[in-house]
Image (cartoon, rainbow, N blue to C red; front, side, top):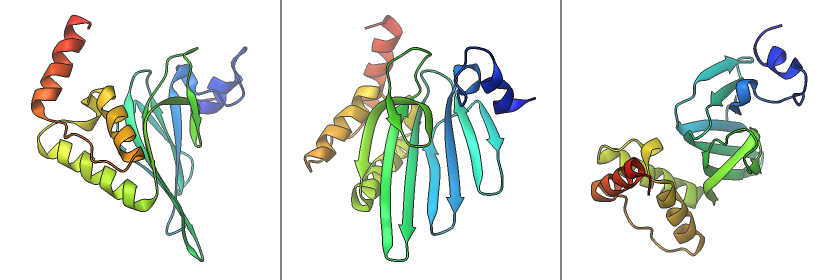
Length: 172
């Protein structure tokens, strides 16, 4: 036995627990029906299940953006973007479809107009030379709260990023 099957067969583990206590994200791609993808994030492992499905594994503390879209014969039925932090074993987390065991939700937007605005916000952060997975978690929470009340979030600037990195370095 290898891979996910071996990991979940270990004594004391839940049947579908991610190996080595990593957060697993199942991605599905059925053109124009169900499309899940990672907008940013750095997985430590990937397992291809078949030509339409794969699993990405993220270590505790890793930040990643998961985009989920689905449609039927009448049009779009789901557009969602979640920015999540992978949790450590035993850490409290929220459940998210396709994410095992779940994650710390830093941001969630629903509906294509908000998802599109959020993708543009991520693009703007990359444009100034910052990797979105290095952005301060509090910024993603700020953006989530501003989007929730239909307000524009503050831009994430290089100055804010430097302040976050300095605070993280000194343990504040």
